[in-house]
Length: 174
Figure 1: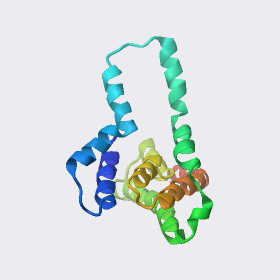
Figure 2: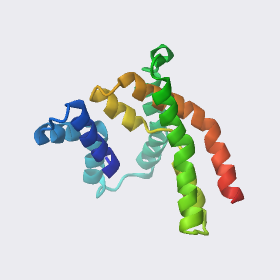
Figure 3: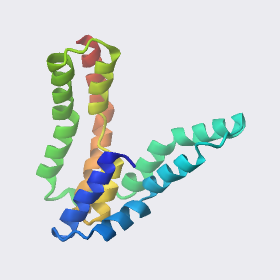
């Protein structure tokens, strides 16, 4: 679990509890969060040397992880009928992540930092990626408008399949 996910869990706990956050409860949720458990397991297994066959199979399995996470945690819950009354929030979240965030990233790396390497393209490309599934999971777990969080992740991921290509071409052109 990365720093942003930990911060996201703490923020969700704060707003999901009406501002009454209890540290032991938040810590318990972080420790019970499957990505955190996988992170700890990876750290514990790091010193072990794996055979080439096991390594290859784990690499293949890992390459499916993002698709399976999207399908299981967002795709299955995605109900377009739940969008009523959420249009403005959905539009704002998707527009921010798929348009404004890449524009800000491009302004920083191309303008402010004047980077001249492939890294700048990667930064803009990463900023234009679809919304994270982890955010939808955390928001749903803390009952922070679950239909909206699932819609934002699902619709945003679908739309990002088009916008990501546009941002990639634009970053290469600059």
